[in-house]
Length: 264
Ligand code: PGA
Image (cartoon, rainbow, N blue to C red; front, side):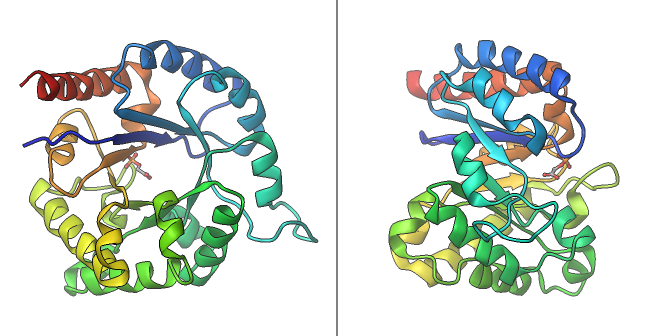
């Protein structure tokens, strides 16, 4: 059953909200967050255009603000890119790296992600590294090998001291988005245990504390089941968190779960 620890709950808005919509959302989230257990670490990841303005809204709160991507260079002739210096100037807390849509549509690979991870750490921002196998890899029974290779390359040269700042999201590609098939809780349990053991192979006992989030078609029916698994430290939610009514429901159930735990 549930064990007391910090729970990471957040959402990547992808390319869905305008600033007007994002501001309404964040003002509401701010109000809701004041009633939630401090063990819930919330984060939101809007588009670049509104990061500064959303930062203003969230500045007095503990809600972390993230960016959806980042270049690894500090500056240079990279039209259309955003550097770690620019994000850090705004006061960004975390940077999502290697989402499957970045890998699929913009050909990002693990080496690129590794450079971004190191750059984010350098600027004291938490890298939220997304990993996941595709359907073909799953069907060929190479999910664990795929994840091990992704982790090994994405975490190359990340020191033990920096591990406290790393967050990992397991997001099976086949479970993400409109056409995604939600993963069974058994499957998520099995894979999160495997990821934990890959991390302890890489880092020894320090690998035990890296927060592991699950993402991919998390919804009102399945979120509690996922969250109660041993090696699931949080949820990374897309569609079900974009609408505040459903996100609010998710958050208050998690809050109840944490409160029951404290009182039991
Ligand atoms: P989804 O998105 O919850 O809408 O499947 C998850 C993600 O892409 O991180």
